[in-house]
Length: 483
Image 1 (tube, rainbow, N blue to C red):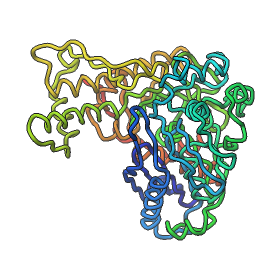
Image 2 (image 1 turned 45 degrees about the horizontal axis):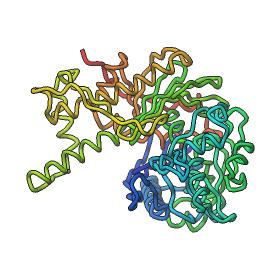
Image 3 (image 1 turned 90 degrees about the vertical axis):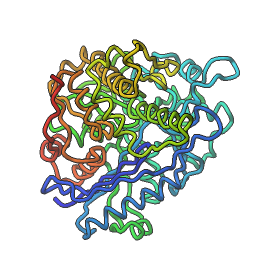
């Protein structure tokens, strides 16, 4: 079957793997921080320099190609990455403006009428019922509300530009062609009819957004184009290599993490956090999303903004305290020290409770976290770290409780994402809160592996994705709940 490369263009890093489909093993893996994020002078803004992201992406692909050696053995390239953002690119794939990421909060800003742009977006669309066939209400940072903000502020791009997701923009650069998207990414925009499988033209008309501005939607796994010869020369891959349409990172991570979907519940924690269960039919509920999955199925997803970014905020607080009070901050190794201290604290953090909703929720971005139960003996760095991690596990279990009436109880708990794979304490806390052993994928970079499996399936290496998952995904020893 050969080798297949999977590329994951994440919120803070770019990763790539080369997957041997015959041996069901990763033969090369590279991950690098991209440093392309831009916060700017306005609070709540989160943008990304697509050119800087592209430079790092090329370096990561070149490193994987060098590790593989024989580039002719590579049969296709699959791509995934951060969902819900907005990239604006020209017909040759080059960006025309900085991208707006999913963390952006300009939709929560007040407009001239006194409401927020997100509220106005939903109202002009026709109210919450207008999104019934989209699987979820849109939130700040989604492509639709960000595009609407640009329209309301007279900043829509010229007709020659196309609005797409950030991974779509990378695919366009790889192929030197116009961007295309797929249902898994289109569904993250707040503008796509998940049930009908098309951009919602009536909704776009009500919002004053031209349909021609949006990237065409292709089936998941379709070939978006062929690797541009100049790009191929720079990264060491074969010119003309098939490049698949980008797939959403949530779906890609599921594909690269789960062996058998029927009983599986995937907990994925990176910068954000999600709980996902695969379903055969479209169904959703308040606070949950029904996201398209290749093959006409759906992932029921509970998504939150309280993942690794929350732990990073606490880490940064500790670093600032060290700098302000002791004249210096040694940030290197701070995560490890926090985990070490937290592991010494008993379950329940001696009554300390930490709700890590620093950036609100998808439903209510104005909600904030809280810290309760502080006493004489539990106001320590270790207690704060453990209570925050317990709070992350509690929030994820709350999302699972919300989806159980639709998805049923799941007996196979799988954990993915850097925040789970690199934090043994958090993995144990998840197993404890869910009351199930937590299986960790044997492969690093499961989203990149998932995108490689999509490309491999499209190339005919597997009969379908279920066969690809069952034949490729392996688990390490399970993490057991605390006694």
